[in-house]
Amino acid sequence: MFRRILNRRRERQPEQRAVAAWYDSRLYAIGDIHGRRDLLDDVLRQIETQEAQSDGAPSEIIFLGDLIDRGPDSADVVERVVQLRGSGRPVSVLLGNHEEIFLRILRGEFSLLPMFLKMGGRETVLSYGITREEYDTLSNQALAERLRVLVPHAHFALFNDCDVMVFRGDYAFVHAGIRPGVALADQKEEDLRWIRSPFLESNADHGRIIVHGHTVSEEPEMRANRIGIDTGAVYSDRLTVLGIDGTRRWLFESAKTPGNTARRRIA
Image (spheres, rainbow, N blue to C red):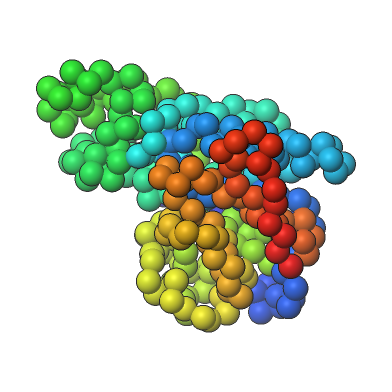
């Protein structure tokens, strides 16, 4: 069983949700990174700049999952998140569907390796020091066993300790979404990491605003009942971040050129 659904202070029940969504401390939700350490470093620098321009206090960061696969630097991304968690800053990490498969392989489900590789896991495997010759010649089981040796314990511990849903004020943060019509406390973990159409097409009030990644959109999707911020970083060079402070919300993204840190203000 993965880490429990997490609740924090001053939380109202879903049926008491205010019209204007709120959270009483500043936080940043970071969308699907998929092995792009360069984009992660850029948005973290922007977060530090924003903090310095306000009260200087560190904000909470919530990673929405899918740190790994497809991009070239999965191991480096995971290491950066491990370091960030060890810095004393409040950090929450949600288990994405890509981390789920990777974790299951590290736990010994070697039969999942072909599926993992088709999902972009080849780049993850190579990022952990598997040579191209090993990748091309080892059997699936031998490759998985080699990977288990190379993945640092701290990375395995991070995956093993991920959250499945995080509540903050009027918001619930998940990787993929939730099953409409099912209470948040009764959601299945499979849906939280894999669901698409039933959630994306729903206009229902879910009790809290659901902040999620998983499904790529050209622009962040701001709906009355959900906020989707996966803008396909690995292909678009755009890693999107949602900032929340009280009733104020804003979006920004990785800057491809120095100084391109303009924010998009959301009411």
